[in-house]
Image (cartoon, rainbow, N blue to C red; front, side, top):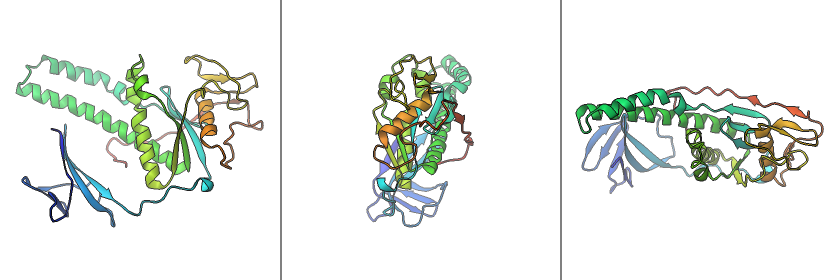
Length: 293
């Protein structure tokens, strides 16, 4: 068992009570906790989940806030974008901005492989085996935390920049069964999209998923199909448009998800824009230790 939950906190019949930084758990004891941030005023603690991780024990509080902002009405949307996720670039927006793939797992793969070889040489069940297993588990935990923090940085950047974000409804489980499984699981598109949608709800912004079929081959300017393999990274159309493949997809996603919205640029590239365009990369600084939520 790696976690258990107290469904009521600070209630007469609750099994958990938090007073300042002292957490009293029924049939366990009083435990001093380090609150990484104070409980906001007006929030009510509903549940407490005790979690065992490789580097210690944690408690996660579920809070209720009745002042969460309502979603922004569609007729008040002023800025919108489509995002195309990928393996060469983590994502590309409809205005041509891209974020590089950090590849946290691949960057730590050699260290992780060395520690796993050490684990395989230990006698299973011995004290040395347990110590080495904890080392391996902590490495995996570190990689997961790096990835999660990166996802939060990107999500907040998007929510700060746009009122509506249109994304593609991908069959990630199906894609994870292909030869690109390791890279797909490393970028963790599904986890990122969940985080982005959660941040959007907290901020009163809108997200919308659309069918991704045809977004890579249809021209965002004239709508004609331009068949291409995965190795071709530039979209070149007979209408004269030469544009990054992922940027073209993001524009098509925006077009599908913003039908009826009076937003400039929602129809894709127009004739006044240059025909040859390159994406620009956005640098997001992610600290190893800073927590984002």
